[in-house]
Image (tube, rainbow, N blue to C red; front, side, top):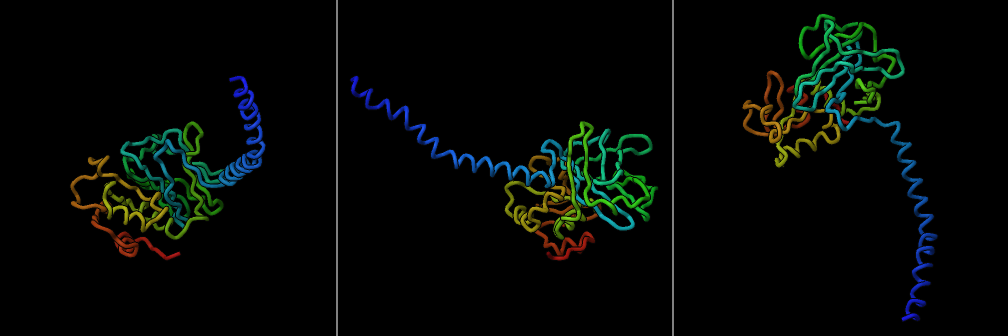
Length: 248
């Protein structure tokens, strides 16, 4: 019995050390790789996983519009939130007539600014900021929570044509209603690729009350005055909702 322990003990004490020595270069490489990825990710857009608010579009020009989408079934009061133009002194606090602005469930808010923006907006969707060219100097919009958390960022200088097209649909108040087990719904989403994150998507299984009875089939594209059921091509959506789409 004693000879058995003498035989096995060296293996137990020396094998892990040998293995550790062999693995050290691999471990060091993995740590280096993780650090590089972390540094690279610092410049990318980051959105809080806990917030349903998403900057879906920034439109430049005479009437500059920043579009914020609410991807939840809850009305959200924007008291204490700020919309900032990176690299400038422009910061917008969500107030209308001295009261905090609200975004309706699965709704959008359009913040207008610029020389051709009209200050007389009187609805739940539109609000006026300033007659200054806010987005003429900055390409990055940031939505900041009352706790100074970066809720959403949007760099319109880096957006693809498909990103801008999806943002245009959302700016028009268009929603996509789907079901999780619907193959056609998945096919519809795939047409938009990663740009689907800029679309207000209502899961009719989870939020049936918000799907209503305005349509019988999914996928369905819904606006205040239009309903389009079934899979629609990007060209059909562009024509239906007056959003220009140019291929990449």
